[in-house]
Length: 113
Image 1 (tube, rainbow, N blue to C red):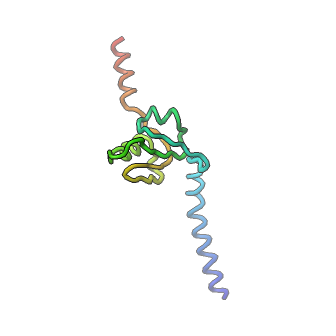
Image 2: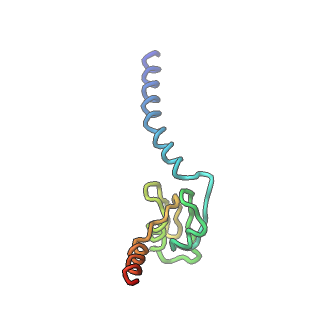
């Protein structure tokens, strides 16, 4: 009896130390009580509705283009968290990409002036 209790205590301690930091890290990045729903995959359109760190669900108004969920995930999802998708929808933690073109466009405009 004491041996099985000791084994159980060791397993619980090992699991507790491995899971708690990960759960705390995830809790700092995502608000589990907030859900943002969008029907457009474009970064600027989603940014008008959603806040980084909250869950977002992408439900396009039309169905048939199987690339849309992949485009949405690439542009709007934090890929360090789980991304769930089907042929017509995506849900993930919202984190928009930064536009690499806007920085180079600003530099080009500065150079022209």
